[in-house]
Length: 436
Image (tube, rainbow, N blue to C red; front, side):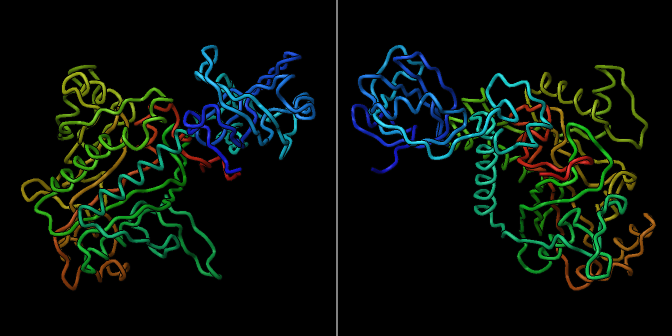
């Protein structure tokens, strides 16, 4: 017989079917035995009746353990007593793989197991359909964004993750031994994005791992995360990059309910596409936080985590938006390659995007004029001549350009309102975790 998935059982009522999956729950009532079976598409109540189930299979149910893998031949029937509106009467059951007991974690919906222990046994944790739904939604986010980039003329690139140069803070670099020479895990594909804007592709994007040696153990930081980066050439201003991001999220939140309806319903999440994303300068953002809460920030400092949360609440109340762009960041807080406005060199043509009170991306218009870039690097204590691979790409015709880097993990976390970003990563890496 061909396998039937649980989601397709309603089409097979009163027909004999073959089911395969994991035992989620067992209840033994002597002459009736209930078994909740789970596969990748859902779960379903099955039951063995002394008069209808093969005697050998009926007795075998006494020895089954939770999370064992079984194969069931049975007949789906309508049932008003079942919360599924139907159930499968078992004719025959075969044990394919018996699970040891006790399980190292409780993977039911009532679980109180701490996230650290759940991650230690992640393959058991993801058998829970709600946990699994997080990663199915994450997968659909990646698909929808890929389609969006493709439709908007972007080319997918893959940049190396072993490098000799970094363009962010050197303190955040992981050093590795590369055949006796020092190399670094890439903390950003920034150089390579700009390289291939200059390489004639004009618009490029990448999904890939990003490494940051940050000594931060919070609910929002990871030492390895999945970056979504794009760079676009021939822009008029950094607002062109924000326009692209705005369209990207409007499209994402419109398409996601079509692509992951069952998973969103299971998690009780209803995405609301923004009509437009409010844009506030850093000064305006600080003024709003000050007026609402009395919290102040030094002139050259940006918002901390609490400030972002407060601003998110204010914007939702004032503008009805879960998103907000904060623009024109202080020059001291941004990399040397961010462009500055002609009339104010104390700020940069840069922005962060907050989603439900947490920063999910940083972007900017880049400085494409070599001599100005060289001066800005020097002002930051950097010598562009010592970064020849980077410097070269500005010397043979670089168009005005800008781009952004997102964290897929944070997008997923904020969309689903998860408490910890590690909930949105299958096997997270932080300052204390290198396994499994």
